[in-house]
Image (cartoon, rainbow, N blue to C red; front, side, top):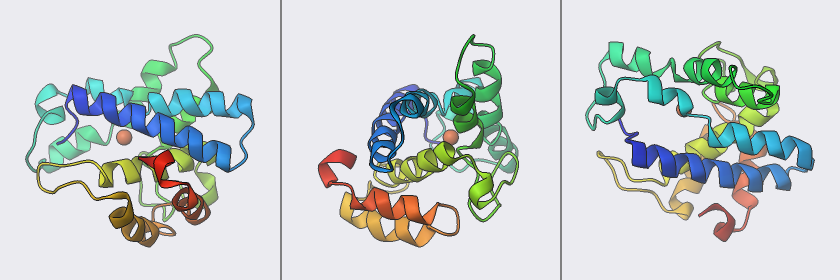
Length: 175
Ligand SMILES: [Fe+2]
């Protein structure tokens, strides 16, 4: 796939930083932003349980391999739920960051406002960071190039208001 340890580290840091910027812009209180930062930083922790050959693969994944990758939100939540005092809303970010507004996401097919608020923040930022990072089959999009496809996905898999707010942030705050 795409998430070698180095890529995963950079992606996790980027998503944490930009989620905090967006959370602040959306008016989240400091206490909730603490949870947001923890959940965003560790949102892909479950990928460490995926076999290394899947994590580091640069080719197309088989359906079986994809099924393994789709377990990473559940694996991440399981691991972090054993950490004493890890915030409940941060656990939900880890579990629900691949849910989609149209109900076709994983692991539970939640839709729209049933997806926890902070998981929706991380979903927007996660999608943007994937678009603006290079992949084996395509170059990275610039911030400007990513704006239109990101907006197109709002309302289907991304929260529309949050996507618009994200795109209103100063470009130096999001890359
Ligand atoms: Fe993920």
